[in-house]
Length: 395
Image 1 (cartoon, rainbow, N blue to C red):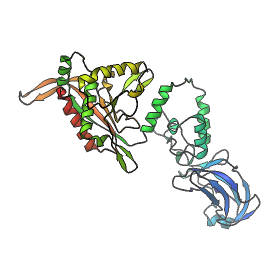
Image 2: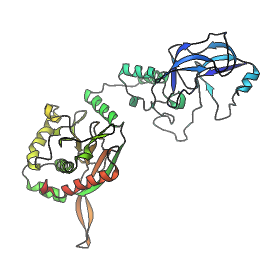
Image 3: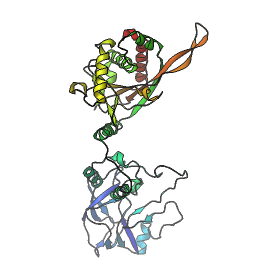
Image 4: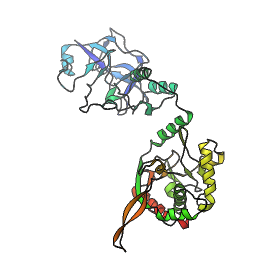
Protein backbone atom coordinates (compact mmCIF):
# COMPACT_ATOMS: atom_id res chain seq x y z
CA UNK A 1 0.00 0.00 0.00
CA UNK A 2 1.02 3.66 -0.37
CA UNK A 3 1.40 6.28 2.32
CA UNK A 4 2.12 9.99 1.77
CA UNK A 5 5.25 11.92 2.66
CA UNK A 6 3.90 14.97 4.49
CA UNK A 7 5.50 18.39 4.98
CA UNK A 8 6.00 18.35 8.78
CA UNK A 9 5.69 21.19 11.29
CA UNK A 10 9.34 22.28 11.26
CA UNK A 11 9.00 24.81 14.05
CA UNK A 12 6.37 26.63 16.10
CA UNK A 13 6.21 29.61 13.73
CA UNK A 14 6.95 27.74 10.47
CA UNK A 15 3.93 27.55 8.19
CA UNK A 16 5.57 26.48 4.92
CA UNK A 17 8.92 25.60 3.42
CA UNK A 18 10.54 25.56 -0.03
CA UNK A 19 11.98 22.41 -1.62
CA UNK A 20 15.72 22.87 -2.28
CA UNK A 21 16.96 19.30 -2.88
CA UNK A 22 15.67 15.74 -3.30
CA UNK A 23 18.02 13.32 -1.52
CA UNK A 24 16.52 10.11 -2.97
CA UNK A 25 15.07 9.21 -6.34
CA UNK A 26 11.85 7.42 -7.31
CA UNK A 27 12.40 3.68 -7.07
CA UNK A 28 14.96 3.93 -4.25
CA UNK A 29 14.50 1.93 -1.04
CA UNK A 30 14.33 4.09 2.09
CA UNK A 31 14.55 3.40 5.80
CA UNK A 32 12.53 4.84 8.68
CA UNK A 33 13.69 8.37 9.57
CA UNK A 34 16.00 8.52 6.53
CA UNK A 35 16.45 12.07 5.18
CA UNK A 36 14.45 12.38 1.96
CA UNK A 37 14.24 16.10 1.14
CA UNK A 38 16.07 19.28 2.05
CA UNK A 39 13.70 22.21 2.62
CA UNK A 40 14.33 25.86 3.39
CA UNK A 41 12.29 28.00 5.76
CA UNK A 42 12.71 31.65 6.67
CA UNK A 43 14.94 30.50 9.51
CA UNK A 44 17.07 27.53 8.37
CA UNK A 45 17.57 24.60 6.00
CA UNK A 46 16.04 21.39 7.38
CA UNK A 47 15.19 17.88 6.21
CA UNK A 48 12.02 15.84 5.80
CA UNK A 49 12.42 12.21 6.83
CA UNK A 50 10.71 8.97 5.85
CA UNK A 51 7.80 7.95 8.11
CA UNK A 52 8.74 4.26 7.69
CA UNK A 53 10.71 1.84 5.52
CA UNK A 54 9.61 1.26 1.95
CA UNK A 55 10.20 2.18 -1.69
CA UNK A 56 9.81 5.76 -2.98
CA UNK A 57 7.23 5.79 -5.76
CA UNK A 58 7.35 9.41 -6.91
CA UNK A 59 7.56 13.07 -5.90
CA UNK A 60 4.51 15.29 -6.27
CA UNK A 61 6.47 18.32 -4.99
CA UNK A 62 8.71 20.39 -7.26
CA UNK A 63 12.06 22.06 -6.66
CA UNK A 64 12.12 25.71 -5.58
CA UNK A 65 8.41 25.74 -4.76
CA UNK A 66 6.96 26.38 -1.30
CA UNK A 67 4.48 24.02 0.32
CA UNK A 68 2.49 24.59 3.53
CA UNK A 69 2.68 22.29 6.52
CA UNK A 70 0.51 19.23 5.86
CA UNK A 71 1.10 19.16 2.10
CA UNK A 72 1.73 15.81 0.38
CA UNK A 73 5.23 15.85 -1.08
CA UNK A 74 5.41 12.31 -2.45
CA UNK A 75 4.35 8.67 -1.96
CA UNK A 76 6.09 5.64 -0.42
CA UNK A 77 5.09 2.03 -1.08
CA UNK A 78 5.15 0.15 2.24
CA UNK A 79 4.02 -3.14 3.68
CA UNK A 80 0.71 -3.29 5.52
CA UNK A 81 2.62 -4.13 8.70
CA UNK A 82 4.77 -0.98 8.45
CA UNK A 83 1.74 1.14 7.61
CA UNK A 84 -0.10 -0.27 10.64
CA UNK A 85 2.92 0.49 12.86
CA UNK A 86 2.84 4.20 11.94
CA UNK A 87 -0.97 4.38 12.16
CA UNK A 88 -1.60 4.84 8.42
CA UNK A 89 -3.14 1.49 7.60
CA UNK A 90 -6.67 2.87 7.06
CA UNK A 91 -8.00 5.95 5.25
CA UNK A 92 -9.38 8.78 7.39
CA UNK A 93 -13.09 8.71 8.25
CA UNK A 94 -14.78 11.34 6.02
CA UNK A 95 -17.40 11.93 8.71
CA UNK A 96 -14.95 13.13 11.36
CA UNK A 97 -13.89 16.70 12.01
CA UNK A 98 -10.23 15.66 11.88
CA UNK A 99 -10.60 14.68 8.22
CA UNK A 100 -7.95 15.89 5.80
CA UNK A 101 -9.01 16.60 2.26
CA UNK A 102 -6.68 16.33 -0.73
CA UNK A 103 -6.52 19.37 -2.96
CA UNK A 104 -5.42 19.69 -6.58
CA UNK A 105 -1.65 19.51 -6.74
CA UNK A 106 -1.37 17.09 -3.82
CA UNK A 107 -1.67 19.48 -0.92
CA UNK A 108 -3.72 18.48 2.11
CA UNK A 109 -5.49 20.69 4.59
CA UNK A 110 -7.96 20.52 7.45
CA UNK A 111 -11.59 21.16 6.56
CA UNK A 112 -12.85 24.71 6.81
CA UNK A 113 -15.14 25.69 9.67
CA UNK A 114 -18.24 27.26 8.22
CA UNK A 115 -19.41 30.40 10.04
CA UNK A 116 -22.88 30.32 11.57
CA UNK A 117 -23.22 34.09 11.09
CA UNK A 118 -24.00 34.96 7.50
CA UNK A 119 -23.11 38.13 5.64
CA UNK A 120 -19.62 38.54 7.12
CA UNK A 121 -17.51 41.04 5.13
CA UNK A 122 -14.63 38.53 4.93
CA UNK A 123 -14.59 34.75 5.46
CA UNK A 124 -14.57 33.70 9.11
CA UNK A 125 -11.35 31.75 8.53
CA UNK A 126 -9.46 34.76 7.09
CA UNK A 127 -6.73 35.04 9.71
CA UNK A 128 -4.64 37.26 7.46
CA UNK A 129 -0.96 37.14 6.60
CA UNK A 130 0.44 36.67 10.10
CA UNK A 131 3.26 34.61 8.55
CA UNK A 132 4.85 35.33 5.18
CA UNK A 133 7.12 32.83 3.49
CA UNK A 134 10.30 34.14 1.83
CA UNK A 135 8.77 33.50 -1.58
CA UNK A 136 5.58 35.37 -0.71
CA UNK A 137 7.56 38.26 0.79
CA UNK A 138 9.61 38.56 -2.38
CA UNK A 139 6.46 38.62 -4.53
CA UNK A 140 4.84 41.26 -2.32
CA UNK A 141 8.00 43.38 -2.31
CA UNK A 142 7.99 43.18 -6.09
CA UNK A 143 4.48 44.67 -6.13
CA UNK A 144 5.08 47.13 -3.27
CA UNK A 145 2.52 45.47 -0.96
CA UNK A 146 2.49 44.93 2.80
CA UNK A 147 1.03 42.29 5.12
CA UNK A 148 -1.81 44.66 6.00
CA UNK A 149 -2.96 44.51 2.35
CA UNK A 150 -3.78 40.81 2.84
CA UNK A 151 -5.85 41.22 6.01
CA UNK A 152 -9.02 39.97 4.31
CA UNK A 153 -7.50 37.02 2.44
CA UNK A 154 -8.62 33.53 3.47
CA UNK A 155 -5.48 31.39 3.46
CA UNK A 156 -5.44 27.71 2.49
CA UNK A 157 -2.14 26.94 4.23
CA UNK A 158 -1.57 25.47 7.67
CA UNK A 159 -3.67 27.21 10.35
CA UNK A 160 -5.20 29.41 7.67
CA UNK A 161 -1.87 30.90 6.55
CA UNK A 162 -1.80 32.76 3.23
CA UNK A 163 0.20 30.94 0.55
CA UNK A 164 1.61 32.26 -2.72
CA UNK A 165 -1.23 30.54 -4.56
CA UNK A 166 -3.79 32.30 -2.33
CA UNK A 167 -2.03 35.59 -3.02
CA UNK A 168 -2.05 35.19 -6.80
CA UNK A 169 -5.72 34.16 -6.74
CA UNK A 170 -6.49 37.25 -4.64
CA UNK A 171 -4.69 39.52 -7.14
CA UNK A 172 -6.55 37.94 -10.05
CA UNK A 173 -9.84 38.62 -8.27
CA UNK A 174 -8.98 42.28 -7.79
CA UNK A 175 -8.76 42.75 -11.55
CA UNK A 176 -12.53 42.32 -11.76
CA UNK A 177 -13.09 45.42 -9.59
CA UNK A 178 -12.90 49.06 -10.47
CA UNK A 179 -9.61 50.49 -9.16
CA UNK A 180 -8.09 53.93 -8.94
CA UNK A 181 -4.59 55.00 -8.04
CA UNK A 182 -4.07 56.09 -4.43
CA UNK A 183 -2.47 59.51 -4.08
CA UNK A 184 1.07 59.79 -2.73
CA UNK A 185 -0.32 61.36 0.45
CA UNK A 186 -2.82 58.54 0.94
CA UNK A 187 -0.03 56.00 0.57
CA UNK A 188 2.17 57.93 3.02
CA UNK A 189 -0.61 58.11 5.62
CA UNK A 190 -1.33 54.39 5.17
CA UNK A 191 2.33 53.54 5.64
CA UNK A 192 2.58 55.65 8.80
CA UNK A 193 -0.52 54.06 10.32
CA UNK A 194 0.67 50.57 9.43
CA UNK A 195 3.97 51.20 11.23
CA UNK A 196 2.19 52.78 14.20
CA UNK A 197 -0.08 49.77 14.61
CA UNK A 198 2.89 47.45 15.20
CA UNK A 199 2.90 48.78 18.78
CA UNK A 200 0.39 48.07 21.58
CA UNK A 201 -1.76 51.21 21.68
CA UNK A 202 -4.35 52.25 24.25
CA UNK A 203 -6.63 55.26 24.84
CA UNK A 204 -7.94 56.99 27.96
CA UNK A 205 -10.56 59.74 28.01
CA UNK A 206 -11.83 62.51 30.24
CA UNK A 207 -14.59 65.15 29.91
CA UNK A 208 -13.47 68.74 30.47
CA UNK A 209 -15.62 71.86 30.95
CA UNK A 210 -14.95 74.39 28.20
CA UNK A 211 -16.79 77.41 29.63
CA UNK A 212 -13.70 79.12 31.06
CA UNK A 213 -11.74 78.49 27.88
CA UNK A 214 -14.51 79.87 25.65
CA UNK A 215 -14.93 82.93 27.88
CA UNK A 216 -11.17 83.56 27.74
CA UNK A 217 -11.13 83.16 23.96
CA UNK A 218 -14.01 85.63 23.60
CA UNK A 219 -11.92 88.35 25.29
CA UNK A 220 -9.00 87.98 22.85
CA UNK A 221 -8.73 89.71 19.50
CA UNK A 222 -6.71 86.87 17.91
CA UNK A 223 -9.30 84.19 18.80
CA UNK A 224 -7.08 81.08 19.18
CA UNK A 225 -8.94 77.84 18.47
CA UNK A 226 -9.66 75.22 21.13
CA UNK A 227 -7.04 72.90 19.61
CA UNK A 228 -4.34 75.51 20.27
CA UNK A 229 -5.42 75.74 23.91
CA UNK A 230 -5.11 71.94 24.09
CA UNK A 231 -1.71 72.04 22.38
CA UNK A 232 -0.39 74.64 24.81
CA UNK A 233 -1.75 72.69 27.82
CA UNK A 234 -0.13 69.50 26.51
CA UNK A 235 3.20 71.31 26.03
CA UNK A 236 3.19 72.65 29.59
CA UNK A 237 2.26 69.24 31.01
CA UNK A 238 5.09 67.58 29.07
CA UNK A 239 7.54 70.25 30.17
CA UNK A 240 6.83 69.21 33.76
CA UNK A 241 7.60 65.57 32.93
CA UNK A 242 9.01 64.87 29.48
CA UNK A 243 9.65 61.18 30.20
CA UNK A 244 6.01 60.35 29.40
CA UNK A 245 6.65 61.43 25.80
CA UNK A 246 9.82 59.36 25.57
CA UNK A 247 10.29 56.57 23.06
CA UNK A 248 11.17 53.00 23.96
CA UNK A 249 14.23 51.89 22.00
CA UNK A 250 15.40 48.46 23.12
CA UNK A 251 15.56 48.65 26.91
CA UNK A 252 16.01 52.43 27.06
CA UNK A 253 13.53 55.31 27.29
CA UNK A 254 14.78 58.10 25.02
CA UNK A 255 13.68 61.44 26.50
CA UNK A 256 12.84 64.37 24.18
CA UNK A 257 15.26 67.31 24.21
CA UNK A 258 12.63 69.92 23.32
CA UNK A 259 8.85 70.15 23.57
CA UNK A 260 7.99 70.23 19.87
CA UNK A 261 4.28 69.48 19.40
CA UNK A 262 2.48 68.81 16.15
CA UNK A 263 -1.18 69.25 15.26
CA UNK A 264 -3.24 67.48 12.63
CA UNK A 265 -4.58 69.43 9.65
CA UNK A 266 -6.87 67.83 7.11
CA UNK A 267 -5.52 68.35 3.61
CA UNK A 268 -6.68 67.01 0.27
CA UNK A 269 -6.80 63.21 0.49
CA UNK A 270 -4.88 63.00 3.74
CA UNK A 271 -3.60 64.61 6.90
CA UNK A 272 -0.52 66.79 7.46
CA UNK A 273 1.07 67.48 10.85
CA UNK A 274 2.74 70.89 11.15
CA UNK A 275 4.98 71.31 14.20
CA UNK A 276 5.29 74.17 16.67
CA UNK A 277 8.81 74.13 18.09
CA UNK A 278 9.35 74.64 21.83
CA UNK A 279 5.64 75.07 22.41
CA UNK A 280 6.21 75.21 26.15
CA UNK A 281 8.28 78.43 25.91
CA UNK A 282 5.81 80.72 24.13
CA UNK A 283 2.51 81.89 25.59
CA UNK A 284 -0.76 81.25 23.83
CA UNK A 285 -1.04 84.75 22.29
CA UNK A 286 2.44 84.46 20.75
CA UNK A 287 1.58 81.09 19.21
CA UNK A 288 -1.72 82.07 17.61
CA UNK A 289 -0.44 83.68 14.42
CA UNK A 290 2.19 80.98 13.92
CA UNK A 291 -0.50 78.32 14.36
CA UNK A 292 -2.85 79.98 11.85
CA UNK A 293 -0.07 80.39 9.28
CA UNK A 294 0.87 76.72 9.56
CA UNK A 295 -2.76 75.63 9.16
CA UNK A 296 -3.03 77.61 5.93
CA UNK A 297 0.32 76.33 4.63
CA UNK A 298 -0.68 72.76 5.38
CA UNK A 299 -3.97 73.09 3.52
CA UNK A 300 -2.02 74.38 0.52
CA UNK A 301 0.58 71.63 1.06
CA UNK A 302 3.34 74.22 1.28
CA UNK A 303 4.68 73.67 4.78
CA UNK A 304 8.19 75.05 5.43
CA UNK A 305 10.83 72.42 6.11
CA UNK A 306 11.39 73.62 9.69
CA UNK A 307 7.72 72.96 10.51
CA UNK A 308 7.63 69.24 9.73
CA UNK A 309 8.93 66.19 11.53
CA UNK A 310 10.64 65.75 14.85
CA UNK A 311 7.60 66.36 17.06
CA UNK A 312 7.14 64.39 20.28
CA UNK A 313 3.30 64.40 20.35
CA UNK A 314 0.35 65.48 18.25
CA UNK A 315 -2.95 67.24 18.96
CA UNK A 316 -5.96 66.43 16.78
CA UNK A 317 -9.32 68.21 16.96
CA UNK A 318 -11.75 65.55 15.79
CA UNK A 319 -14.55 67.71 17.21
CA UNK A 320 -14.49 69.73 13.98
CA UNK A 321 -16.25 66.74 12.35
CA UNK A 322 -18.97 66.69 15.02
CA UNK A 323 -17.39 63.73 16.83
CA UNK A 324 -17.52 63.58 20.60
CA UNK A 325 -15.20 60.60 21.03
CA UNK A 326 -12.42 58.99 18.98
CA UNK A 327 -9.26 56.95 19.42
CA UNK A 328 -6.63 58.61 17.21
CA UNK A 329 -3.37 56.77 16.50
CA UNK A 330 0.00 58.36 17.38
CA UNK A 331 2.55 58.75 14.61
CA UNK A 332 5.24 56.03 14.41
CA UNK A 333 7.93 58.28 15.93
CA UNK A 334 5.66 59.48 18.74
CA UNK A 335 4.28 58.00 21.93
CA UNK A 336 1.27 60.30 22.39
CA UNK A 337 -1.63 61.87 20.55
CA UNK A 338 -4.14 64.14 22.31
CA UNK A 339 -7.64 64.32 20.86
CA UNK A 340 -10.32 66.97 21.41
CA UNK A 341 -14.00 66.21 20.79
CA UNK A 342 -16.92 68.46 19.91
CA UNK A 343 -18.35 70.59 22.72
CA UNK A 344 -21.90 70.00 23.84
CA UNK A 345 -24.13 71.40 26.55
CA UNK A 346 -24.60 68.97 29.45
CA UNK A 347 -26.06 69.22 32.96
CA UNK A 348 -23.52 69.62 35.77
CA UNK A 349 -24.32 69.34 39.47
CA UNK A 350 -23.49 72.54 41.36
CA UNK A 351 -23.09 71.49 44.99
CA UNK A 352 -23.10 75.09 46.28
CA UNK A 353 -26.41 75.89 44.58
CA UNK A 354 -27.76 72.37 45.07
CA UNK A 355 -28.95 72.17 41.50
CA UNK A 356 -27.90 71.18 38.00
CA UNK A 357 -26.50 73.91 35.79
CA UNK A 358 -25.71 73.73 32.05
CA UNK A 359 -22.02 73.61 31.09
CA UNK A 360 -20.23 73.26 27.76
CA UNK A 361 -18.25 70.04 27.89
CA UNK A 362 -15.87 68.26 25.50
CA UNK A 363 -14.07 64.96 25.72
CA UNK A 364 -10.29 64.80 25.82
CA UNK A 365 -8.69 61.53 24.71
CA UNK A 366 -5.07 60.47 25.03
CA UNK A 367 -3.84 57.58 22.88
CA UNK A 368 -0.44 56.23 23.83
CA UNK A 369 2.17 53.54 23.31
CA UNK A 370 1.38 51.10 26.12
CA UNK A 371 5.00 49.94 26.21
CA UNK A 372 6.02 53.36 27.53
CA UNK A 373 2.97 54.38 29.56
CA UNK A 374 0.46 52.50 31.66
CA UNK A 375 -3.10 53.60 32.30
CA UNK A 376 -2.23 55.38 35.54
CA UNK A 377 0.53 57.52 34.04
CA UNK A 378 -1.61 58.31 31.00
CA UNK A 379 -4.53 59.22 33.24
CA UNK A 380 -2.42 61.56 35.37
CA UNK A 381 -1.08 63.28 32.27
CA UNK A 382 -4.60 63.74 30.91
CA UNK A 383 -5.81 65.07 34.28
CA UNK A 384 -3.00 67.64 34.25
CA UNK A 385 -3.88 68.75 30.72
CA UNK A 386 -7.53 69.17 31.76
CA UNK A 387 -6.50 71.21 34.82
CA UNK A 388 -4.49 73.58 32.64
CA UNK A 389 -7.37 73.99 30.18
CA UNK A 390 -9.61 74.96 33.09
CA UNK A 391 -7.17 77.83 33.79
CA UNK A 392 -6.74 79.30 30.29
CA UNK A 393 -5.20 82.51 31.67
CA UNK A 394 -2.14 80.43 32.61
CA UNK A 395 -1.63 79.33 29.04
